[in-house]
Length: 456
Image (cartoon, rainbow, N blue to C red; front, top):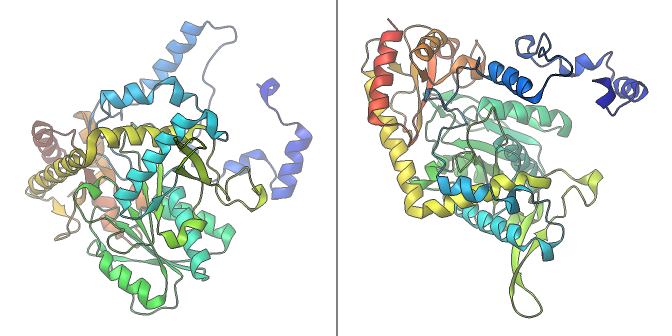
């Protein structure tokens, strides 16, 4: 294996000395031991390709928690939405699959036009006038939104709702160590954020819509708070819910970010996914990544160009704060294809089916003996949290034996002791359930019956 490593021992030693580490293993100390491979893959030298494939397939078969095998009620940021055949067919065309960064617009008109269409639809979902050509995922988009807000307001204090997904808050905290931003977490009460009336002068206020427990927040109150403090309002919004609820931009958000995985990207161990980013015209010069624009050439023919790329990695690299390169654009093109295929009415129908299924499932679950809503009275669209009479992890394991990929155990998101969003008891007994348009009434009824059996 050492024959294929590009770095010499001297180079590795120099890196470790600079970082103040004693070994390369310390670089990965944050990764839990249970997730690390403790032994090799048992691949003998000289094995044939069929033998290698057979070995890898046998390892893959050990993973039972797969959405293509089990009925999926898990969400928490990654959802089992339908990917139409037309999206797979068009998104898999070689023109998109092999496209490189469009540095030369004269030979990249097709990709540039597709990205321009993506930007248009992303902006409409956000309810804002401009969207960029995508980012890596929802978490990195949130970081960029906070960076923009701090730069615009000139104040490094950031109020972050406890309703923002815990993983995104963790990514934000990691970046804040380098940028010096001061993050102040605002806890939830009954599933929604209780913003303080005082407590300093935030430069940025971050909310989620809906929040990660599925509850719809009052963005009007967030806008009023931002106006009171002269702060930038950043909203991490679910783009599917935008099919039936008022957009975050309509509520007055300055920046709207989100995860676009639901549009054409199947579940796949965390990626590659798609970061959505939109903002007001007042902030367009601080837009991360790149912006594709429409113009005309010398003959008056419509043409597409990269209008804004001042912060891209190929210009002033040492001052760049974003890095969106190569074919991450593929996910944006796929999203554009799916959104174009659905149209306005189609997206509204997807969101409506999610909402109807989620409310039907919620009402059936909380009617079970011992099962309670974790956020009673809160409005939700696609996702909700319940409290199970036994530890949620035990219930989830029993449901897996019945063929259901149950909702996420809240303790796996917040930690065993809970956080500003749920208590320790809520984390241990909390189950986050998601219902997409793929779930049928028969599947929901079977899931409810299986949970009733699992908690006894």
